[in-house]
Length: 225
Image 1 (cartoon, helix red, strand yellow):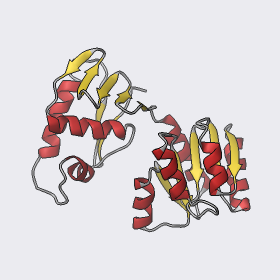
Image 2 (tube, rainbow, N blue to C red; image 1 turned 60 degrees about the vertical axis):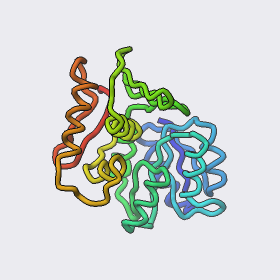
Image 3 (cartoon, rainbow, N blue to C red; image 1 turned 90 degrees about the horizontal axis):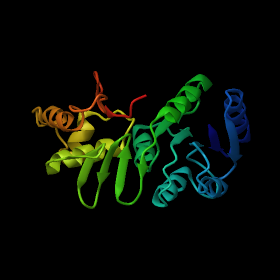
Image 4 (cartoon, rainbow, N blue to C red; image 1 turned 135 degrees about the horizontal axis):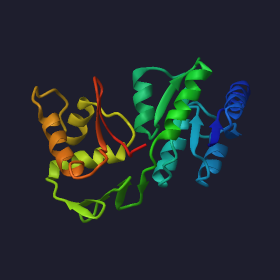
């Protein structure tokens, strides 16, 4: 993979870059947020490793700017800011993973590899695609291999959320908040019921399943390996 490390601490940047190069990756380094943004906007990188506390332009602003420009390159935040609120803020800004300093390089390498294995989400302003599943956000049309799916509004919202987070595990709580606007547990099987219905429509007539249950964690929509 071709990686960009945006880190103002030269010792940390050299350590991370050298380790990733030894694993066979191509690595560029930017020492501040503005240089990192300039390099990242050409879309040539498979993954960005970004510190949050950067001179010139902080890591959150860098990632928000990239996402606002439609650049969806995966981002791993690598930072000393390790509080729960910090992690949530980083992920909501557009980060894909979050690792707190001090860190073990083996864990950093594993997270880089995991992000690199995620199926690409091909998306433009109006269309989401994961494998052979396509969602048109304007016409509200969902199809797989040319077969159109008849989804109810809530099923559409659920599938849209799963597609926007393809390759990630999403929890029941996340789905209740983002799809149903519940900020409490209604103590019902509403999520499980809708997932079951969605599976029937999306996966039943095909030889490969896209919607998977991650036992004890939640659900994941991912392309076949």
